[in-house]
Amino acid sequence: MSQPVEAVLVGAGNRGREAYGAYALRYPHRLKFVAVAEPIEERRELFARQHNIPPERRFASWEDLYAQGQLAPALVNCTMDRDHVASTLPALELGYHVLLEKPMAVTPHDCVRLVRAAEKADRILQICHVLRYTPFFAALYEVVHSGRLGDVMTVEHKENVAYWHMAHSFVRGNWRNSRTSSPMILAKSCHDLDILAWMIGTRCLRISSFGSLTLFRPDRVGPEIPERCTDGCPIEDECPFYAPRIYLTEYTGWPVSVISLDTSLEARLKALQEGPYGRCVYRCDNDVVDHQVVAMEFENDVTVVFTMHGHSHKEGRTMRYDGSRATLRGSAAENELVIYDHVTGREEVIHPGQIGGGHGGGDTGLMNAFVKAVRNPGQEVLSSARASLQSHLMAFAAEEARLTGQVVDMVAYAERIEAEVMAEEG
Ligand SMILES: NC(=O)c1ccc[n+]([C@@H]2O[C@H](COP(=O)([O-])OP(=O)(O)OC[C@H]3O[C@@H](n4cnc5c(N)ncnc54)[C@H](O)[C@@H]3O)[C@@H](O)[C@H]2O)c1
Image (cartoon, helix red, strand yellow):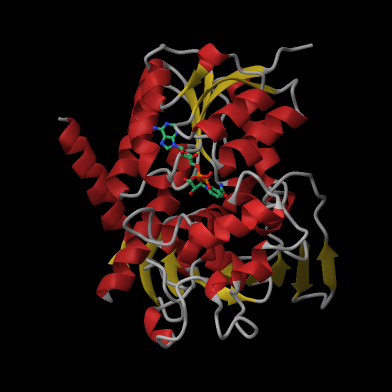
């Protein structure tokens, strides 16, 4: 039997512990974490205990870890968005194959720098575009590329973020402010732009975008509303975002597990009284949009409209592809694709198979692919940094289009960024 691939973890936060740490515990014959770098002691020690990592292999930062040289063939990087470049470039230089959380970087130039660094070092740099690895999107890809829809003319794709998820991650949580993390179109929707670029399979030529932060603003409430839900809020009964209703129930999985490592009721109440997740959603330091549309033109005249919004009753992506031979409608939450054939008039319903793990099985599929690629270097990964670059650049261009009100010429934009990085390399 083959030995598990050995890896080090950088950043033992939510993704590091709950997605990839959990994978290694579930599939010990595939992946083993042999070292961890994490500044928060409680998180570092918990991860080390769960994975039997000895004290001399526990580090307070990626810098301390890298000072040891290369400790394993693979490295999983789950730091926050703005730390990705500084923590990945030296890892590639040391010789690690790297699995890097999305977005790979928060500027277009840094994305290109990472892609070029991985190519130069001849190392795998795989981006966690988990949706590509889900049975649902794999089935959608198969239908679109089978030719059954004929020529795809136009696509509508919606990322319906549930109201509570919007409040948790993008108003109170890690991705609320574009200055400390990244704009919503990158943080949340780089997955969607990546899926669209992958499905359509040609270059995006032009991009425009509109959107704003409309609901989660201080001017939405009066001075009688307190800073925290736990301070006796007069509108707690009618407010959909009242934190105790979201976080103080019997359920302790994600996102409740994010507010406190100790999930006892007392610890969670304390987290709401003192931490970021108990803050009034109208009184946070958030600036990312709560709804945005992006209109795109791809080669061969394919037009695409993408909508992201944080006001959905239910979480889940929906999509519609209209082609010269058939129409396809899909719902990831329902795990259902329906094809309506223009010639026969027949409808076919597909329910793709399911695999365990977060993101509709995408976390598991992504890790399976990474482990396989580390075992067989040279094997293509679906979401290599180079493959993920187009959609990251589309996200930056969409944000530029939204902020300037201009249509961005995507081809010229991508060429300019790559040329600027190459010029800087000399
Ligand atoms: N693929 C997906 O679908 C998906 C979903 C959610 C989040 N993400 C991405 O995953 C990344 C991590 O998100 P998260 O929710 O786990 O965040 P998190 O804040 O829970 O975890 C980040 C961890 O990095 C640690 N860290 C900070 N400085 C460090 C250093 N010098 N050395 C080592 N560790 C350090 C932090 O202490 C923290 O524990 C983000 O980039 C996020 O955008 C991806």
